[in-house]
Image (cartoon, rainbow, N blue to C red; front, side):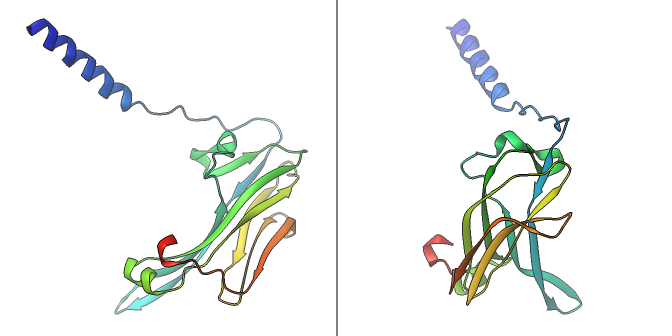
Length: 166
């Protein structure tokens, strides 16, 4: 009986250790590549002597389907993209509030879409956008030239999401 309990304990210990294994870090690719990063803007609320972040509009690559996993390098906080071939990137823009109660009573705007473009070697691309009650848009901009690459995603009117989507 004691041997059986030791065996169960050893199996449990091995399972716990394997669950804590760290994933392998990806290497930054060598050779020609382009980088893709997100952007954000925030406004601050003055509270006495301090100012604290109140709301932020974030624009970033949408990797919810894991299609960009092969290009992401966590250490560099950027997606390293292959160059010379058309690439479809899902993008998302969303307004969030620092205080949950404010988020419940305020409008949260969200816009999503896909942008197709051909990355150029050694260029930095940034996901940018504008969120408002009257119109919202999101695009990818070549930071080196300031030009919009691919097609800009634009929605006329409000892009506010419902209370259950917050």
